[in-house]
Image 1 (cartoon, rainbow, N blue to C red):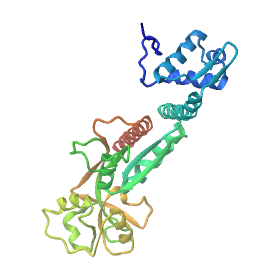
Image 2 (image 1 turned 180 degrees about the vertical axis):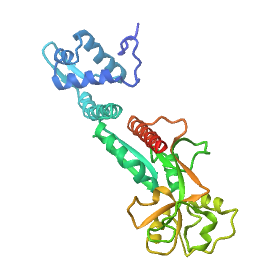
Image 3 (image 1 turned 180 degrees about the horizontal axis):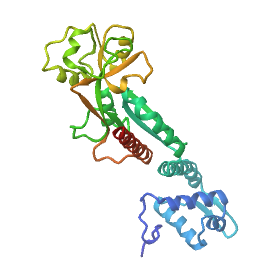
Image 4 (image 1 turned 120 degrees about the vertical axis):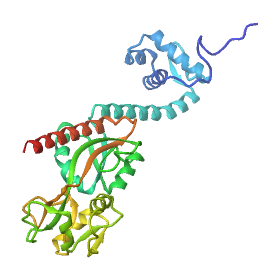
Length: 316
């Protein structure tokens, strides 16, 4: 005698149901009618019935008690409805959120940035970005160079603005700005009116300096390596941005990246050093990784703004 299987042709019992079958089940349960549910899903009634039959076959249970006049959920059908409805709704919300993020109608972008570069690079780009994508949240992680590199490497930031990473295989580096180091001094200092200051002249003035905890110290020490030893600094700090306040207070002069010097008029000015020493600030992102649509759009605006600014500087 041939055994009758509860599975329809081509349906394997125990296999995970498809999303289309689950949607058909929810519609039938809510509307209490195969005909109404089929119409809501733009299916013929026979096609809709096959979906329900396929679902019951995969689950190995009957979900509806059907007669010519009525249709009711079985006990297991009622239980399954309670459990599956929330899951399908969560999936729908996730899909909708993903679509909105892909179309830049929602979502967020997280940017790691060294302290000295935040005000130079980001305000104007954020303003332009918000005009284009007002519903995308922009997050900024302000850190030192090592912190920004780590935030990108560990995926805490979509990308970073940094002056280290050019030689690292873990990240892709896109140059944005070639920035010189300058001598920061008070506006009333004897050197404030000079066009340039030679490195060897620094020995005549008391200095405040960044410690070896700052990556900037590498660039500064390299520039000073061929010179006679400078006097011991009055004070050492960890962050270049702190030096500006110390210079303004009159504790000494300091070697700092140009971006850290306030725009004139200000109590502290930056004098070009001769010969010049520069650092390259660039956009870093994890090598081989695709940026989210929100991050990619911001990165493109950032690179475009940087190139426009550099072009204007060259023309001047």
